[in-house]
Image (cartoon, rainbow, N blue to C red; front, side):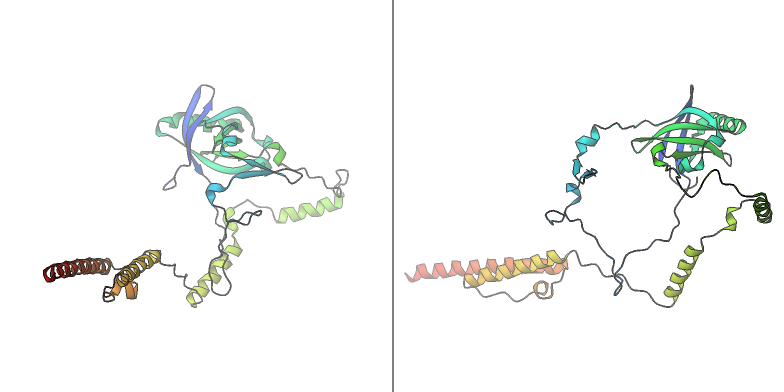
Length: 312
């Protein structure tokens, strides 16, 4: 699978046979992704989490899962509640049945994964693959992905075993259309005309015959705007060190205020306090200057006391 990383490791189990495998996602989303931005300046739209009752912003740590009942009441579920629910952590893909492939309606199928055997399990992997192909059957299995057990089928595609997760029975809707009556049928003449049309459009399926023209058009539109200079530079993030600079400035002002209260002459303004520089050397100079001023002030007071004693 090249540089693609396995998302799950376990083993296919049928009878007394275990096949260690790795699970890889077989599909990827190439839809065009857009961001919500401010029309005027291109700034991204940000969302905050607010409580609808008290209007306060809520942190992730205070967010829980809630189940809304049919009458609109809310049942709050905690981590302890979920800990008591049945969870499957088994690393086993357990085969329950081998069924005819034509019994699995594509509507039941959900997400697809490739199964790659461990190096030591190539032989049983090939055995399972060849048996499925020869018997034209799929293996119905149960598997736990992210702690939840789900149904899936194993089938063969291009010489590789593919696992496709399945929907649960209550997730398939019934097609109850009053306008479609099973008793209504096309006439012989209508069927003959339909057959002619089908024959004219008959052919083999080749996925390369189709392309996402919308995605291609959007990418071309964006490329043209970029080449034409119709882009907006991302906003400059605020300096996270601003609070530190403000703190240094506040401390410097506090020192000067304390000196003034003691009747001392204020120290010359430093580059750090006046220009809000974040340079560590400037901060060190300011601290050293303050310390030196304190030493000078103390020495002056000592000399004044000595002179007073001599005079008395």
